[in-house]
Length: 548
Image 1 (tube, one colour):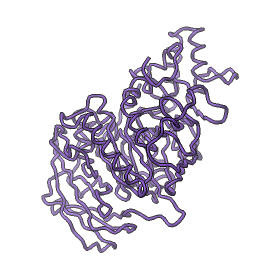
Image 2 (tube, helix red, strand yellow):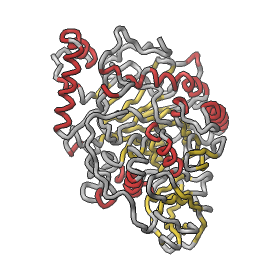
Image 3 (spheres, helix red, strand yellow):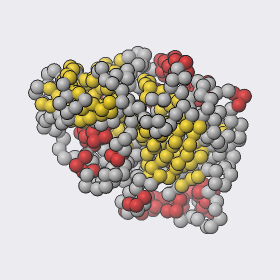
Image 4 (cartoon, helix red, strand yellow):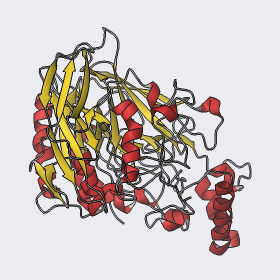
């Protein structure tokens, strides 16, 4: 996606002096007794090490590995990965990392596989599309005018809201599009991003999936090297970028508590490959993984798959051809193997669907008969807000184009409590930062493959009043409301019919200029080839399962 009139951000230098290890982040390990840590140094330090223990005295030590990154012009820097092993579950560990040349990091701490008290849930935090600048969900102090939003910056404002306040989370999940972009300005924007998230990612496992802003050759190399700590079980096990072969993080899976997670790259549908990892290798791998996961549902009942692009959404043209491209392959797999949720970003908004299959829904979260699709791509990016230029279909339960993130509370084998938390400083008062805007429960007593004879049958017509909610914060700025209560797309269509497309283009251009002057920006959908709905919502258009 592109943005109109993006302000130029100034970097505080193009390189970094040699210093103690930085950009520390931790992931879940390949088994329950392992946590893996990755960090960066600006010069080669020889033998990497990690020290850990149940107290700040540490006491245990392990060797790591280091790799040179040579794809940024004018500099070479190093990633290091090391594992803490033999860990006990439900135990907090203290650790530090480093080497003899660069020294050791500060001491961090992380909980390994917390066991909730009876009646208490696991807490997973989900979001996508968060930049180094505009990282509004990270903390209230982050701005669109600076890439710098580390712990010191976040401490200048409230620390009891945003991601930094989710200190009791068991896991963070970032579903693609990091930094905007990891390779920008010879990778220094990526440096800022990883420094910024260290304040959460060094203390809580930070899991990921690949996004389209990590597609370019150098950006993909950054992604693979910075996240080579992931507990990959992909086949093939290695992925080759311009920086060489490393851990294949294009797809992999892990268990956390009662949830089996599957990371996938939706970019495999759009030409991203190293020649060995392909869409075909993914499909073969994921069917095998899902088969194993279904055999283990007595122990791990919930299955969550996540990637970057949408399978279902309703904001703009991305929800048309691109979504269908992925949906054509994946929807039958998700249904046949009983995947409970598909989570993605890409659209800079939030949208929670009802359980949906072949464009039909029962509009109920009680014992879903199909997968629930959720877009949570509004953590904060320099492309800013995404207008809703398509009408809300009946399978869309809730949508809002404010910045926000997701809390998923996993109580037991049958109950998940779902919340969406608003973190938008651009159009709302500070008192709204941290406000829960969507709050619902999903109850599933029948985990396993879905049954085609019981699949949702409701046609994609309008939602009964009060059952589906659409909070379009772009709509009031259009100045088209006439008190009729008609949806936004109908008001736009009437304006275009009366005044013509040129007048509509002129109106949007003026509106973008106005909101940018206020310090608020919305994605300029005129420059996004997938968002044609802003200009010419297709006459007689209807939501469909396949292409027309």
